[in-house]
Image (cartoon, rainbow, N blue to C red; front, side):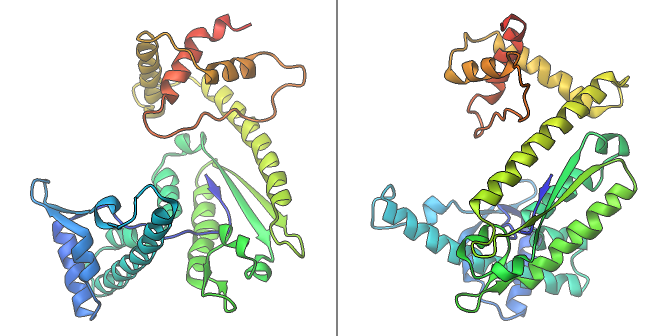
Length: 318
């Protein structure tokens, strides 16, 4: 996991069970909040079991007289959506807090509407895992010294949560409090009960530019080297370990993925530039590799197929 100085935004749920959504709607009305946006943007689906409300597609709701492909239309839609999503988040947040305070909603339910995506991910990845699983995990924490001094530099919004507008911009105190709980309480608690690897680095900003691109590049280079070393170490330890295949779900997942790769690879004669790039990376190097090669892309773009082809041909690479 990667954790910096930014807690991030609360996510808007794409799907909410009907009973829960209607309870939130009632609480919002009780709190005298305007609920028109919730009613417009969420559609009840009776075919779902149980019945649920779904967030309508932006493409359907944000209709413009301009051609949707024009940059100006996209910019207008993004601005409109940002305003709408901020308002929807406020409604969910206020209503859910009210329900939780009254004991009508459990914390386990409420946190879905109060946590940022990054806290959700950390809770999912580390919160309910066994010590054996956590041995295979690694967490990198980046702190930026005196970051509050640079809050008025526009680019710093990428690295911390900012509230307000110029000239009264300041660090978001609520987001910072949640970040500190996640970083300084949740993660140390996990470490105390497991062998989770955690690396913490402190970066110092440029006095004029704040967290500059040069500083960012230096950090990324160091992170890449450390990540590569950790992955090699974890892979070697995993291979050497005597797995109990009936109880180790991670090992079972690896075997299933390997089988899937083999099946996919048999269907195609794969040719693409990416294969040549991987080929060059796999070849022995005099200096050795200090950075990982990252295969990335959206869903169904061929990542698994590419790796399947690499696995099939890797012994023949020379």
